[in-house]
Amino acid sequence: MQLHAPFFPPSVPHTRSLEARIKEELIAQGLLDSEERPGQGGDSEDEVLAELQKRQAELKALIAHNRARKQELLRLAKEEMRKQELRQRVRVADNEVMEGFRRIMAARQKKRTPTKKEKDQAWKALKERESILKLLDG
Image (cartoon, rainbow, N blue to C red; front, side, top):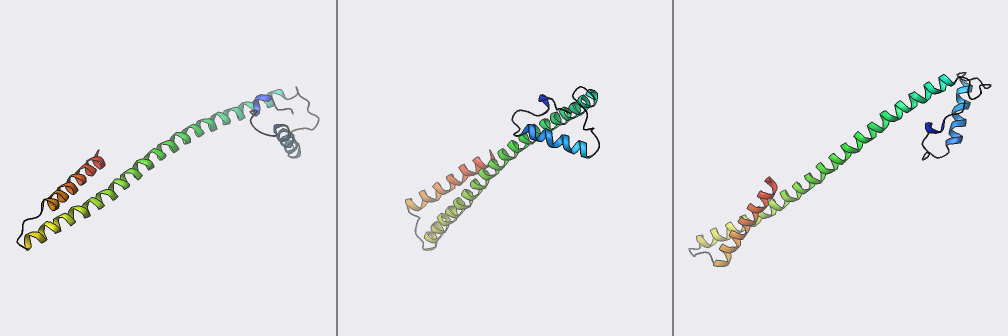
């Protein structure tokens, strides 16, 4: 039984030795007579070839599906990593806002008005936090 050239793509290494091993295994299992010549039993070869081609087509479709899913998962993972980074930035900004609030409250407890620098730092921290939250929501 000689396997046709379209059976194995040229990219598969050692196709001739693979064909020989398959033929030996078929003979050993009694599925193929060792005297069979090319041309004899052509229908069974065509049937096997058709089945193999059908399975190869199914595998190609499965590979394409898996590749698409993998790309989608990669995209989702990158998006999630970006969101986690933004959440970390929000936590840092929250701490900065709280620090500014504490400074202003400490100044008020001492019965003095907060300095311009303290007010500016608090406003800057608040605005930065808001911009990060907008990025996270959008």
